[in-house]
Length: 116
Image 1 (cartoon, rainbow, N blue to C red):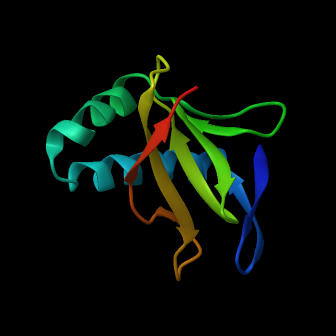
Image 2: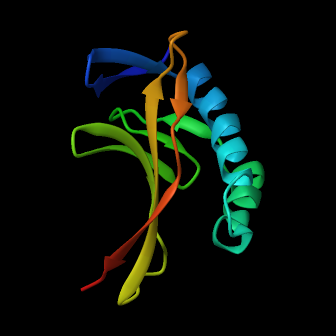
């Protein structure tokens, strides 16, 4: 089984392809609840149509255009705006283990980033 290790506040935990599939469904669910819809709705279609979860050979987990990274010591799926622009919107979806030991998306937020 393909998996990677993810650092959290309480230790290191495995993340598998099955976890990524469940996180994809959870990400769609969280995005569906966000307002205003125009800021998030296009992401739902993108996830449904073009977002096979994968773990690359170099250990990077992805759900389509979302890449797992670490921000401020926490695991976060990040989707960057393309093409680059002077002011860009990145989407951050932090993940955490719930009380049942399943990975969950805790929120999706927009982060405005100035380009170079």
